Length: 246
Image (cartoon, rainbow, N blue to C red; front, side):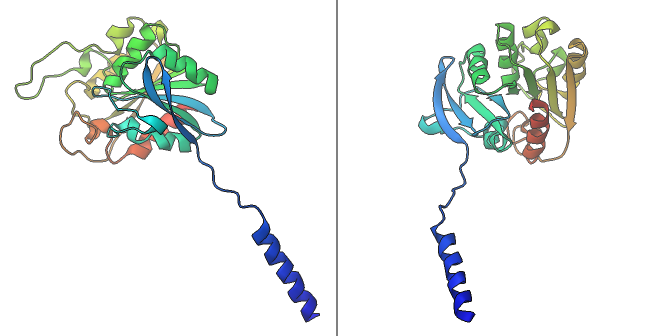
């Protein structure tokens, strides 16, 4: 009886070790040429939808081969893998893109396609939609939304005209379902929280807002390490945007 038991146990152990090991396969990451630029494409095996992440600042993130991004400080850029982990195909383009071409590409990957722009990326999102891009949904975080978004420039900074979503789109008819995500303590002088309500009213029911709080601010209030860039609450932003995009 004891010998039979040991033989059975040995067989089970050998079977377990002989079984093929299934590696945990993550999303594929590659570089694609689309819309006149290089873009990082992150694609899960079975995406639930697609998001196009438009960085702010000068928009230049320096995409290299293999989906590598050299400049990763921007809030959307630094959280790109978090969206892939939520099941989304993710496209992160370098500056100078044709947004319509980006949207058309991602429609072949998985719909719905949601364009997510932050800071100056909200200007480029609005500009692209005005020129013919047709995403299924739109998210504007820390946005240039209305005339009330622009306050007094700090110190001796020269005041300049700032285009915003309203002036670029001209009509709310072009808006897809839209989500505004804004930090209540955003102190950037061109994305004041005061600009949110006028935009939502102008959108005529097509836009809603989610206000976020918390985190911390380090350095320039218009940069990615301030409340403007949701420092310390990245996951909250990802959760809110993902729920809308899904």
